Length: 266
Ligand SMILES: NC(=O)c1ccc[n+]([C@@H]2O[C@H](COP(=O)([O-])OP(=O)(O)OC[C@H]3O[C@@H](n4cnc5c(N)ncnc54)[C@H](O)[C@@H]3O)[C@@H](O)[C@H]2O)c1
Image 1: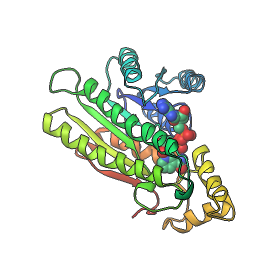
Image 2: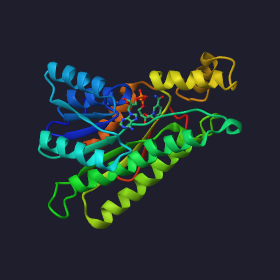
Image 3: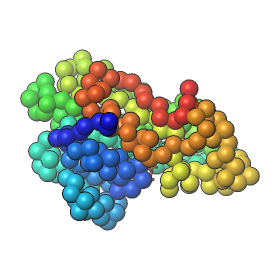
Image 4: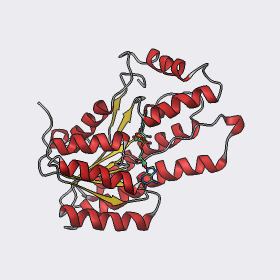
């Protein structure tokens, strides 16, 4: 039996492709009305159109998660389209690999801007839209996407790992703040293991480029070797966990981290 999300209204950042798009598809298959939000407007609009053609309730809004005013506009459009909001998946993220000896400060700032500032702004705007203490909304759930990189020390991804540790911690503070102030919004983190999609392939390639592994394939083999469940993650593995955290099945799950990594990060 799958989680029922009928009537749940969810905005997914980074929804134009990859894990965000697959999450939107899974949520929509389970009855959610979804808004995809992304900087890639062409791909995002096409993805929303494809979902609509499949009979799902879906639309697209342009959003740069690093920009506060962009969030204001996107949330206005999304809540107008959906008639309110019950869930936010802060999924948009970037990864730029660097060895410390070649560290590029601009790369570090860019990663922190998208992954940390972008997620924090998402929490801000979702709280403003969903909080029930002042009658604005009816409460809801936020799922922030971190990574197994928040729990392990893999070479070459220092800034990315730091950003994902920050996402995990800020999520817990957000859960505490929401509870303290009666917003009625749960905030949880999902830490995916390596998924062999575009970002996963880029990361494996980086391991070879940086001289950390003889080949991308051997980097992947090393990751699988570090994973007790013995395989990489799939986008569906991650989307199913996100669906659970958005649903009423997880009503009392708050401020937690759901690792979906085959125990790599334990
Ligand atoms: N792929 C993996 O192996 C893996 C593992 C662990 C965690 N994650 C995390 O999962 C999330 C999704 O990753 P993915 O594999 O789908 O990556 P992806 O690169 O395929 O997709 C990322 C999406 O985010 C969008 N995006 C980037 N910057 C943005 C911005 N400033 N504003 C709005 N949208 C923006 C991109 O346009 C893209 O559509 C990320 O947070 C990533 O760190 C991925």
